Image (cartoon, rainbow, N blue to C red; front, side, top):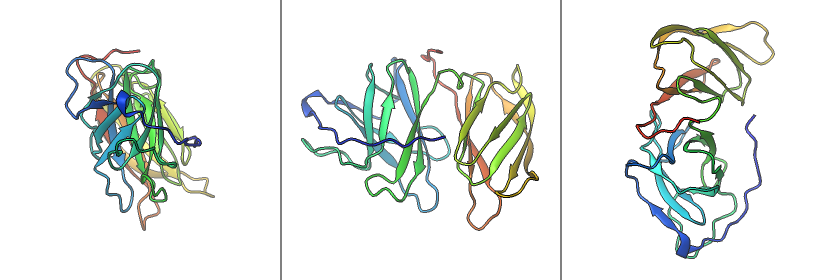
Length: 237
């Protein structure tokens, strides 16, 4: 279950800010990337990630992961803003909070549209991009719909309730295709309904992020995914 936490107002120490540009990382293993699911009416294209020692801009693509951006070492307490923060300004209360633990060498920030937040219209979920449960070859599933979704992915099975997430390891043990069968169950119903039947290609060197999202005017969700193929400097944990 996605947990909500209180978001403190943090002072900005402008003399300690390290400005990181949108260039792809050239050598440091500690990186951050982003993907954005806007939902209806979403319009974000970038996010400004700010902390006491960090200020960076991330692209927010919706069909793939953003370019990797280097981040400094240590435990990072950050917030997301739609625009750069003015010099000596305070971070507004209500900005989505992001924590990247010191042990994470790769972080993926998942931005989920939240039109009810006037400060920044998205929730931000940080995922350890190389940690347990999201190693190479595995799939991370976010169910943003009101349906329970379950499926068989090659040799793996997974059930994810509404508003929750889950993951599974390599669906097969080698590069190649595998059968995918996904069903959904509407609230108050007990009979699964077929949602998706196909064959997917498994890449042991890639991770997949799978979203189950509602469809406006439809009584069934839809599925879309992005792939993270890491980089040459990745350190697996």
